Amino acid sequence: MTDCIFCKIIAGEIPATIVYRDEQATAFRDINPAAPIHILIIPNKHIDSVNMMTVDDEPLIGHLFTTAKALAAQEGIANGGFRLIMNTNADAGQTVFHIHLHLLGGSRMKNPMG
Ligand code: AMP
Image (cartoon, rainbow, N blue to C red; front, side, top):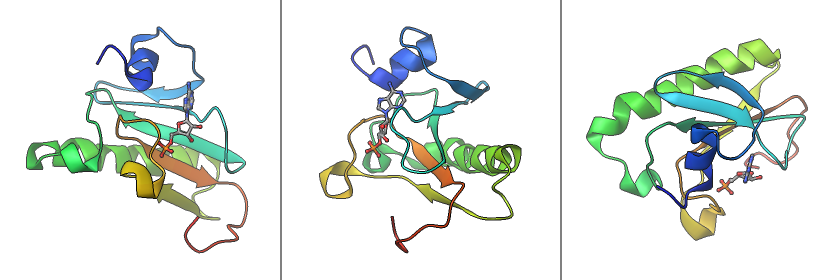
C-alpha cells in the first residue's frame, strides 16, 4: 500500500530501528514507547487489521507471535514477562492500519490490560 507508513518502513523509505526481519515479518522499535521495551512486529504483507485477515493468513499471524517470543528472549524479558497487544479499529485505539503486534516489557505493568 503506497500510503501505509509501515509498508514504507518495510520498503526502507522511512527510517526505523529494525531489530528483526525475515521473508514474512519485520520488527522495529516503537517511536513512542509505552514501556522500556516496546517493539512492533508486522507482516511484510499489508493487512489493514484483524478484521481483514483470512484463514489463509493464520500461519503468517502465528509467525508474528513466534517472532515476538524470540524477541522477548533476545531482549531479556521472557522470564520476567511481557505483554502482546494487537489493537483493532478506533475503540481499541488502532492508529496505523497495517496489522502489528505490540511487544511490551521491561517493567511491571500497572494495569491488568494496558
Ligand atoms: P496502534 O495504536 O495499535 O495502531 O499502534 C501504532 C503504533 O505505531 C504506536 O504505538 C506508534 O507509536 C507507532 N508508530 C507510528 N509511527 C511509527 C514509526 N514511524 N516508527 C515506529 N513506530 C511508529
